[in-house]
Each structure stands twice: as structure tokens, then as C-alpha cells.
Length: 109
Image 1 (cartoon, rainbow, N blue to C red):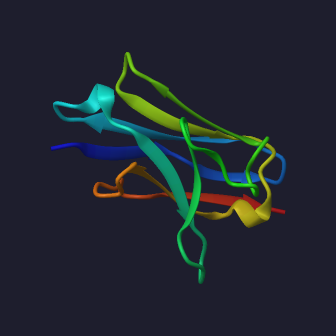
Image 2: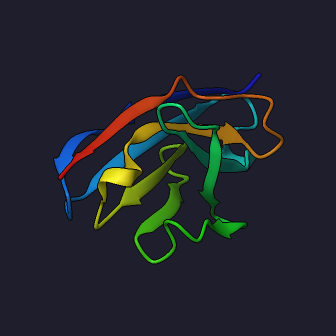
């Protein structure tokens, strides 16, 4: 059974950078496909991106999704952050059956 545990995130001013990590555990950790999502206050959860699936238009060119298989970790590096990027960020398996616990990212103007 795959489990996803998130870390990182936090608060930053406009233009800053943050990273959210997703530690993958379980027998198939090295082969588990991971995607990223976010949910802003009062809005529906939206897809952010994945290594093999690309990026949402709203983050393309600013966010980098990658993984470090030596550590069984996926991460999203967020650059040139904007206040509208404020949300709870989630990693999930690509079939969306397993989710991380969520990590708050707050960008102030």
C-alpha cells in the first residue's frame, strides 16, 4: 500500500520560491506515478502538473515538478510565486486513489 507524506511549503512574498516535498513509501514506491494538485480557499481542487503530464497553464514556466528516486521523493519547486498561488497543495498517485495530507502555501503581496 502506497503512502504519501508531505513536507515543506510555508509563507513567502510575491516573487519568492518554495518547495513542497512528497515522500513515497510502500513496495511500489519507486514506480509510483505522482501528480500535484492545489485547492485555494473557496475554490475547487485543481490539477497543477506531473512529470509525465505537463503543467497547468497557470503555473507553466514557473513551477517544476520532479522526483528523486534515490530518496523515493517527488517534489514541486515553485518559483516567481503570486498571491493567486496561495492554496493547500497535494500530491497524489496518478490514479488519484492515494493522497498526501496537504501542505499550505501562502504568498503575500
